[in-house]
Image (cartoon, rainbow, N blue to C red):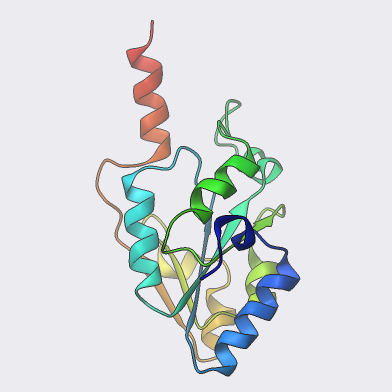
Length: 163
């Protein structure tokens, strides 16, 4: 197991880690997201994603990528290096890789995971990279979210509770 700093890696390093794991017959899982204001829903999703394989690669939206998603002018709240350190500190996560493009499609195709996971707010037919993963014989999962737990809901609650 890598320490937290070593878990934050380049795309090329994640590809090498993936290939080595797959050569040993291990199943590699990939998920992605912003992970701004990490909450129990995130941890639950990452734990369930990791349970679908032997290694979990997390594609993390860069600050630029978060802003491009129109999540609001205040987002991300937590800068990318801090978000990466937090998710890398989770036992379920084996590697964290930044991506700046609007979607993680190029990263998914480079990593070539065996399993692709997103939260249940993404129907399987809308998950970026699903067709590619399936074309390689992989699986795609849209895992149910914990009701009421989202960063957007948390930000909204904070705004209404502060004068």
